[in-house]
Length: 68
Figure 1: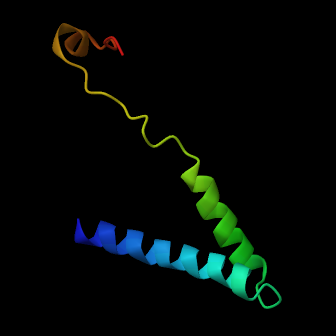
Figure 2: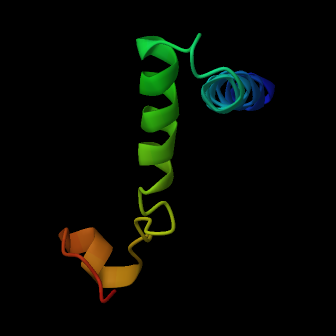
């Protein structure tokens, strides 16, 4: 669990670095900063609130999806 949070913090830091570099020094920012900023923004558009639900009861035993 600590590794996951460390990875999240590192990737978040890299994204903020890219965004701030694009905002504060656009003449020195390059393709990498633009790609990192756009990629992070694109990930924020994913519907992470939509998750699979656990199947319960007889439907799970028979391999059918339950009501959603």
